[in-house]
Structures are given as C-alpha cells and as structure tokens.
Amino acid sequence: MIQIQESLSWEFQPEQPHLPIYREGELVGYCHPFYAREIVEAMNDQDKLRKALRIACLDILRAKGGNPAKVEELMEKYLAKTERPKSGPRAIAAMLVDRQKALQLSPQEFLKFCDTYKVSPQHLNDLAAGKSVDSTLINPLARILGISAADVKEVLNGSHE
Image (cartoon, rainbow, N blue to C red; front, side, top):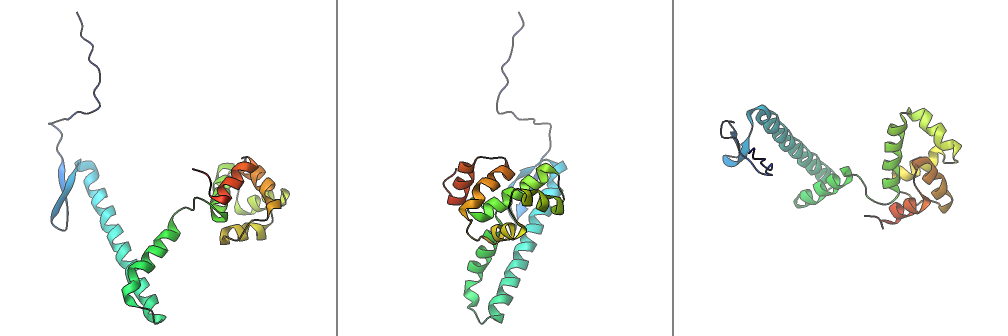
C-alpha cells in the first residue's frame, strides 16, 4: 500500500549551506549564500543613510541654534514623514497617486481627469499639504478614487482600519 505523507510546515535541508551574518561582530543569523551579499549590502546602506540623516539633523539644529541632544527626536520626526499616511488629507493624496498609476495616466492627464470631477489642481495641492477638505469635495474624490463617499470620509477622519 502506498503511504501518502502530509506536507509539513517546517522542514530542514542539511545539504543546503548557510552563511552566518554578523553585525558589529555579533552573530545575528544565517542566510542562504545567494542572498547573503545583497542583504548585508542593504543593511550597510541603511546604516549609512541613518548616519547621513543624523549628520543632516545635527547641521539643522546647529544652524538654528537648537539643542544637539534633540537630534534623535528630529530624526524620528523626519522618518515619520516618510511613512505613508493612514488617515487625513495626505492619505487621500497618496490614494490619488495610486489611482493615477492604476489608470496609467501622466500627471497632466490625471489633472485633467480630476478637473472633470471639479477637483482642481489647487485642491490636489491642498490635499498633499494636509489642509482640510471641503465637504463638497468628498463625492468627487470618491468618484475619482472609485470608492464610496463613506470610505473617503473614513480615511479623512481616521476611523478606518
């Protein structure tokens, strides 16, 4: 009789070599040789970028006469700005960028597209700047985004998951 084996979630392959990866002399894990160099280079690049951000923030603080001890706070402020907004006008602006890409429209074509729904370039700039959204724009924004007006309100108010 043929035995059917159920596939297992976890397995190991002792014939596969893995390379150790170290950070500042401390072992942090093992990786397949194919990916090791790329992972280590990416992590070193991340460290370089963080050091560059620190230097730039220190320069800003020194130029403005600020307290250099607050460099970490300023770094976190700038890093937070790089994250995609989850709610508010900037989140709608990010969704509009996604919509433009999905429709495969150039910036000029997308501006015309939005303008046909009575959302002007100034309105779009205001969204990107995080300014409050006039309630008359909710329905046009919903049509542009292809979602319901209630969904637009949820994103604006931050009451979505």
